[in-house]
Amino acid sequence: MRKYEQTDVLVVGAGPSGMVAALTLAREGVPVMVVDQEWRRAARSYACALHGRTLRLLAELGLGGELLSAGWRIERQVFYLRHQKVGEVRLDQLGGGYPYVLVIPQSELEGLLEKALRQMSHVQLLWNHRLASLVPETTEVLSTVEKLAESATGYIVPTWDWVVKESFLNHANYVVGADGQHSYVRRAMGIEWQAGAAPETYEIFEFILPSEAGHEALVVLEENGLSYYWPLGPDRGRWAFSKNSRAEEEFQPKLREPVQVVHRGPQDVLVGQLSERLKQRAPFFKVEPQEVVWHGQVRFERRVARRFGVDRCWLAGDAAHQTGPAGMQSMNAGLWEAHDLGRRLARVLRQQGGRELFEEYHQQHQRAWQALLGLQGGLQCGPTAEAWVTQHLPRLQACLPALGEDLGHLATQLGLVWHG
Image (cartoon, rainbow, N blue to C red; front, side):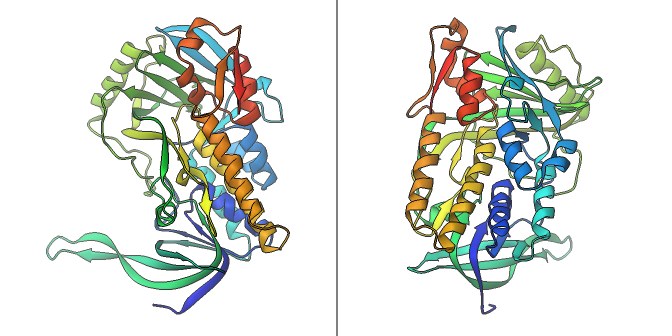
């Protein structure tokens, strides 16, 4: 074991939320160390749509131009019921400089964030490093960080596995847990989940289109679930179909290999499966998929941590919450939480505030998620809401691609009122 390392803030998890927290801290002049047990940033992921409000934040962090050039704009979301169009929300009515949702692979977003972090002099970004222990003390947090390395096992046919190469003690004033839904930081602090609804499992197809994908996101409301479609670029799209069975598959981890094609089964079988799903659940979608480039199942929980942190350890992103994927709310909320938490940490370290800043952080974001999950507040039907809106209100809340005031503005287009 190496002796020890000292940093003001240790960020656990180098996904978008973790890197936004680190970038915010670095821009405030705070030394920060980021650790992630993966060997590189994500090569593919599921969350890929940035709300207009999030785009404003990322532009403030210096990522605006490169981000916009790498993404695909979504200008409206259209709703279908029994295979017929019943309504829509127009994102261009939100204003604010970014009247659209930008679809971008998470790998691209992480790449831009990593590039920005590498340009900061007082940031350590350590891949292949995992948090092995966490002990909060009165004046600091003591952590054991393990460095991982590949090792061959087997005699005739070697296989590769990750082993601990070395470890060191980290002394940090504060720890940010941005390490996903299975967060080690959250579990180490004994913070439990509060469930919002039953888990949802989706079968997902990412595919090549023969013509332009368009700029509309589609949602098909069904009796026992929903299906949704996001254009991913000029010739690529993604359909997700909820499964009625209570499959117990775990959420699949982000792929780290630099591959472009990942699928299960022969290509013609996958295209046939997608075509059959579309005939059954979205017959209005007349574009025939040419090639399936990714296929799998993803399980989502709807839940929030009972606290967003304790003492010197605080959570952001999926470590603290998750909801359905259609509105891309969890990832976008996580980026704002990470930015907010980073600024609060900087103020505390500069002695411009005390522990009350962290309690405000918990109260503010806990209240927001209580509303998003419909536990306290949320969407309610106004006098102009149509029957299909009233019938599918719980699902609609997680489908709208916005948060906070923007979510309220979108909801008014459907005759809904937001109580956040």
